[in-house]
Image (tube, rainbow, N blue to C red; front, top):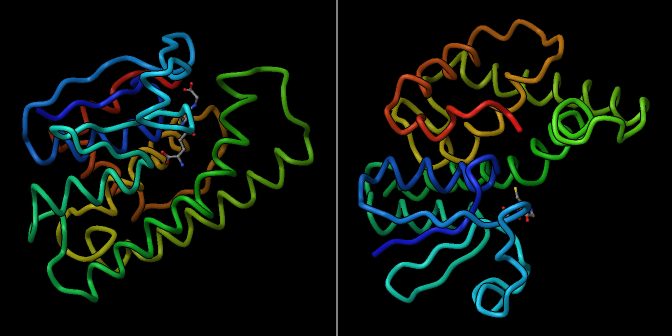
Amino acid sequence: MLRIWGRTNSLNVQKALLALEEIGRPYQRIDAGLAFGIVNTPDYRAMNPNGLVPTLDDDGFVLWESNSIVRYLCAEYAPGVLWPLDAKTRASAGRWMDWQLTTLLNPVNTLFLPLVRAPGTGDPQSFEAARLACDVNFGLLNELLSRQAFVTGEAFGMADCAIAPVVHRWANLPLERPDLVHLQRWYEAVRARPSSKVLELPLS
Ligand SMILES: N[C@@H](CCC(=O)N[C@@H](CS)C(=O)NCC(=O)O)C(=O)O
């Protein structure tokens, strides 16, 4: 049985949930993190010493780090569909997933905290730098998506699972954004997939 711990308003949990919905296997989700607690209990720390969400348990195989969870689910349950069998396509997907973690995410969260989760925090200089970084980063994605339907080609795959919740968060911030038509087309295609019900909650 697949089990995942994590609150649904967490972007990192949403990545794993998207992959779970895409593979179409039954799974159980247990609320954890922030108001739900659990992450500091000895049992949880034994699974995930970081005390963060998400954590996955697949019949005793325990895994943390959202992108590693996405990779595992796609490789184990959707090879050749979400997990590219071709090494170059797989490397390209892995590259965009690394970019999501190292480059795309932080500026989005610098905007998200004062605008949504923690009003009154942050400073105007960091906010403006993050806003500009987002325009550059999402512009780069827009350029990629002007040439192909999804992040690593013509089919939805694991990199789309990792990137969709970040685009979703940025696209729904009360903020002026550049008009990125290809990114918008991709976002609408992602939102049309039944799996994207995991993105339905308002940002919080
Ligand atoms: N690099 C980790 C980061 C995990 C992370 O920062 N999770 C956040 C939620 S997005 C968290 O656990 N925050 C504390 C909490 O919810 O209690 C991953 O991608 O899984």
